[in-house]
Length: 215
Image (cartoon, rainbow, N blue to C red; front, side):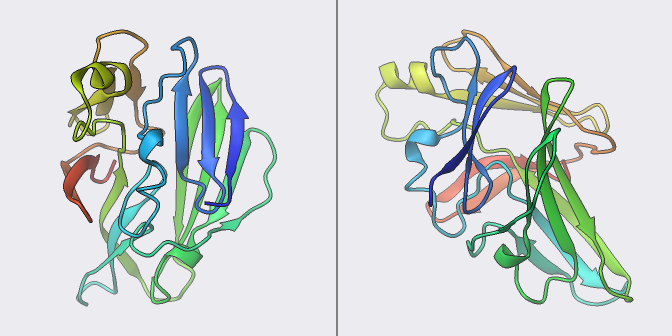
């Protein structure tokens, strides 16, 4: 994984995998090291088709009548191109290396702070002269709701549940610790990012976590 990029914000201790700039750990302040993400299974989930917070899936086609093609930044892992940043951006990357060569759009991802809050931002750009349609856009919401192989006592300490509110521009995802203790995490839209759907992700070990589409 080539190590992590570590950041200390007002709300979180944040770690990004250097190779992918996806989240390796998201620990809320004042929670005794609790992590909303499956950081304890990071090594096992580092291979192709396992998703992380910071990945992107979408469907696109050239023009308005061609076949739709599916794209995902987790389908075939390759080291992304890190970009130079200045505050308030913490990290930024060109995701082209981890997308197929025939991908018709350029995707840039940024992690930044705004009023102390952590923001995940994607910029999707069409570099060509041909119109490109985006038919679906999904952001995997990968939190530690993975209960398999854990005793109940461990589940209470490390796991959480995700509860989406599919309300368009008013949509959000609430992530609550299994033991009922705070803090809870609320994922809300940044700008125009309506939450219109929610579906299972297909990963190598079967259906797992869920993600909002196009949220």
